[in-house]
Length: 171
Image 1 (tube, helix red, strand yellow):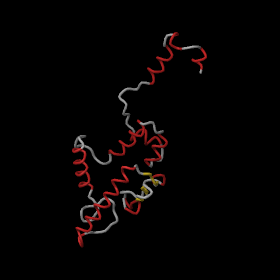
Image 2 (cartoon, helix red, strand yellow):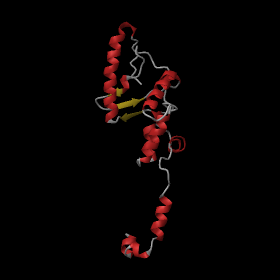
Image 3 (spheres, one colour):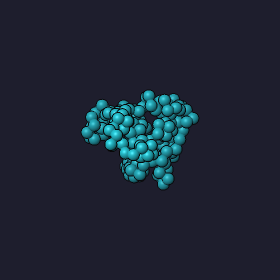
Image 4 (cartoon, rainbow, N blue to C red):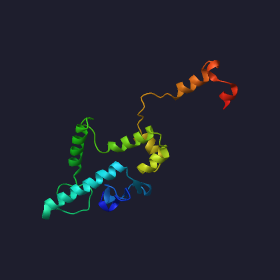
């Protein structure tokens, strides 16, 4: 991700590139501009200041690539280093060391679903060409028990005195 694709004043990030060969996204639909949560904007502003300090400290060693996330001398992060650093963060957060960055996509999709966001909107946010990818590949049910069947059956079979008047039951 480059700073060119991040607009901290608007609080958005434009997803137009990928780590895939030639840097293209998988599909046209994968290209999108997303509103960032306020916490992400604040964190990116602080990161931008830290990166400016690293640039100043590195002097002539700094290799400018315009990247948001770099080594301390401005070069792109190697995937194995990124995974190692991510595991440190996961360990410090108390969620274990086996996490990898790609799991954040599944976590995002699952949390959006848990909070009632329609699958069509989640697919749009994730850049999926269809809701099937969202539902089958990325969404994990966070609720431990599916309660719908029991709740409906309780409504159907509750004693008559608890149902109310026929008008209330119909309304």
